[in-house]
Length: 452
Image (cartoon, rainbow, N blue to C red):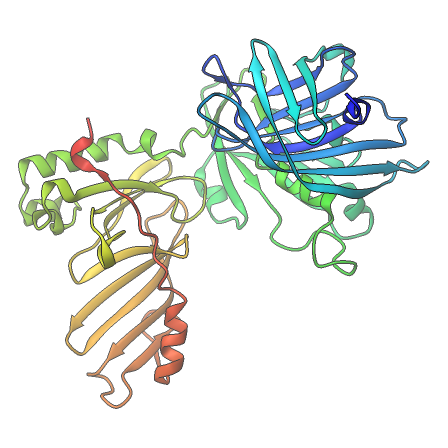
């Protein structure tokens, strides 16, 4: 137990899966013997990853240890990590601190035993047991407005300032704000109408909240879209700013005053498109003809694909936190990942976006773009690049490439930055630019016939 005294001074953050009695464990814990060491556990959006912060409760310490880990849950129910970071944090008489990295290759594991969490670290060769914390022994780091609260780690209390409004809470990096660089790290806001936040850059939905009157709100995370720290000292943000920025993705949110918060509600495809899936399966079983498919906003390709090759998948195409439903062909090679139908959510209701075909195929490229490969004949073909507008079925054009021997047989290479205005480009430059959008997402579709 040679370094247990050091461990007791620690602060660490790590990404971890914690499952016990079929429930995820989040909240505040304390070291079992003295309860002087506090552990805060926060869940990531995907519910499979967690971050944990541990620190001394006392403020009058000259040194604290900071530990950060990424951790995964294995099939034995053990949380293991192999890239642990240990940092020494030194405080001066003014309460300011400096960090010094000790190592970045720590390893260890966490095990859950009833209401206890046992941490074993290979670097220190020690075990530390945590139990649910006595609320009277820890600070209240909860911030509340009219509808909801957010709770921040006790360890970060000296790093931030906050501003609360009726439906919003904003967190600022104290040092950056004091230096005159804004310091905005993240904000959490409730929106009654999805259209209100769909146009905001840097925003992503986290879940939904229903107030005591039954009104439904989207709970949205907003990150800064410009630099909010002192970039004159370094292009990279200070570590303390990055901690707060990343905290927006894991912060604990709870409804108050009769409101109830539902994490990930209105975001997961399996919950949003059940009727659409059943409708597509019905079309497959009943072998609808092309006119019937077109009338129902479905691709005619389902008449040409074997039943066991029609598949579906969920994918957040526009990175707004809400998954789209896509249908395509279970195939290999160049056809792997091809999309023939897309559905999205508009004002919390599923809507059809577009259908593709044999000479009009869609793919997801570069994670958040839609690429439309089309052909109008032997001497004309191209690729149109779109983004899917949030809370809308609109595809907004970004860039287009076409080979058009009808337009210009001598130099048939064209690029468009709108939709109908084309510019001739040299062949080499044309293919160099086009290559940037040729990395397609090769989606593994789920067979549609498996839907029940």
